[in-house]
Image (cartoon, rainbow, N blue to C red):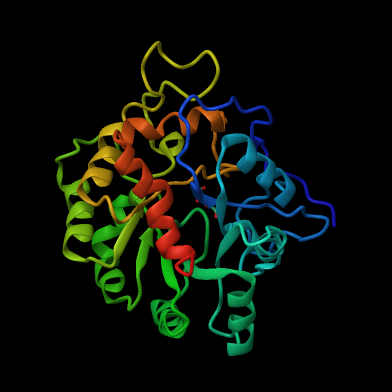
Length: 307
Ligand SMILES: O=C(O)c1cc(C(=O)O)oc(=O)c1
């Protein structure tokens, strides 16, 4: 099948720099995606965008270039609940990738078991309105109950303004709950303002809630961007995001994950250099101990507990 990219689509950056920051041994890129290729794994009819292809081979090449050992491949919304591309990548990884799927309530126990055997360890519930149509909460709760029995967790993606309305649902989930991209704070608001405070309270009061401290390139308002020539001398890229992410890492060091978010769907004004994104890590996790927890211990506990 032939697909035409969404107008204005930015392709991932094909020649990332070699990071200056040396990742600890065994580091996990705990949030990344594969897109198609569309000719082999067609994009879903209900998708809200059509991306460029981003194959498993290209993902594994990036992993090796940046110095990661493993990937967690999160089902992208452009594939809907058709998990074939993600599953194919997990199976081809030689045990070095685990997956997070999107499923509907019609999925059978046998199909869930097959996903588990392929390496899936979680399901993703998406509440970002530009990405998905609404799924009734009773359907999601039913799915959460079924996947809890497999020892899986739930990944949630939402925007900070929607947390109050989603609070009761999130806090009733029976599994570990992993928040994508810190619940998308508005970093132009004060870090000690009510919006981010509510997110910290969510984590503080619920020991089963984890957060990915990822996607500074999506959250940043002031930059500078992680692109050659756009980094201010001696300053981290996306420095307006640093205090938010660092706060979460320092307060909840055992419940944070980091990922590149490659191939960075839906960015509108620039495409980051993934090598420079890795160089962002020591600004938010300033000590070797915090770095080891963020990049190795925490993702291994969640995705490879048997190792
Ligand atoms: O903000 C986004 O556009 C976005 C989209 C997706 C997806 O389409 O799955 O995943 C992400 O992690 C982020």
